[in-house]
Length: 185
Image 1 (cartoon, rainbow, N blue to C red):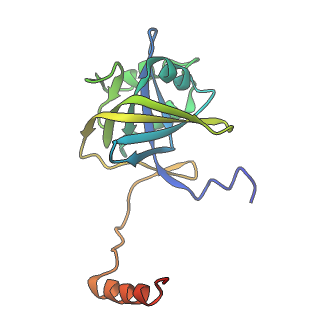
Image 2 (spheres, helix red, strand yellow):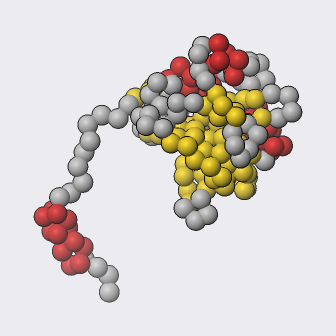
Image 3 (cartoon, rainbow, N blue to C red):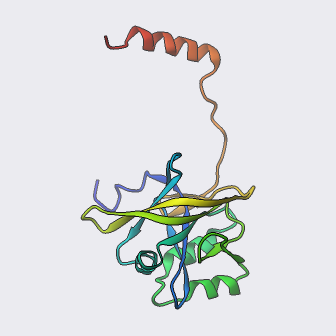
């Protein structure tokens, strides 16, 4: 399997990262967006070192994290397919009818209609020697909507399909018995 194809089986949400500097607001798409800790309550986002967002967050020390909804595929494509140095993505999205609101705990725009919107203060930046930096944000405020999250896989968008049930009580009892039988002593 070549390097370009190896990532294709990965399934993820569509993270949308907002930030602000003294000149402008920006939004970018980030497929690698994760909740990583309950206590303290933390979110991690991997961002390409060349992204405008990297410089903006390093300077402002705060950012918004959103999980895009199934109605935000166009918003996600614009946010991920254009560079903030060349395009005012916020202006494009507003002209297309997408709505934003001012965050309460940070200085940044937040996106209306997302499955989840989280205001974060930068806690740490971790570099790996690769082409992305890991930004860890302390969660300051959460806003949940009833929107269904957008799924991203193989450079395509999807929505949740049929629910697959967990093992039932009888199956779990059998599984637990087998686990007990094979526990290391």
